[in-house]
Amino acid sequence: MIALLADLFLQLSILTVVAFGGITAMLPELHRLVVEQRHWMDDTTFAHLFAIAQAAPGPNLLVVSLIGWKVAGIAGAIVATLAISLPMSVVIFFLFRHWERFRDAPWRDAIQTGVAPLAVGLVCASGWMIAASAGLDARGVALTAVCTALMLTRRWHPLWYIGAGAAAGAFGLV
Image (cartoon, rainbow, N blue to C red; front, side, top):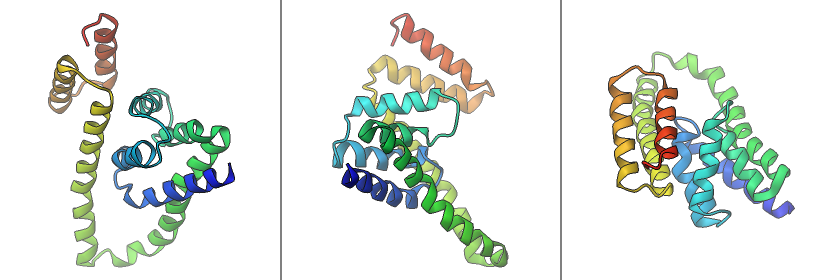
């Protein structure tokens, strides 16, 4: 069990290096790690844990805690949560103590400008990966496309889309 917890901590700590955009942006790598490399769970379980984490109130990193719980119980949840939050918190603490000193440096603007599209791309890849893991059929893809188009053009609260998706599922439309 100690070896499993150590592996869980090490692997998740490494993933924090690519967490531009938060947990959602690192979902493809998280999926690759826990489903394809380590075989700690299957696609469906991963998608279900992500859905539970998104439906529950609280931070997005809840999905990592759930993955840790699935892999190694309560100890796994604690280790996974620490692994995903502690290492980069320490790095950020020390990095941002000096970040303001370089506010006029051109390389600082270049980094900030480059990270934004990277985060958008990673979040889009995450959306694609979760949709593929959910096993959507043509109706599911159509519902996703309509919701995406509405989200981009309207300022409706996301609960309306969640409610519409739940209703479509309850009536067997998707």
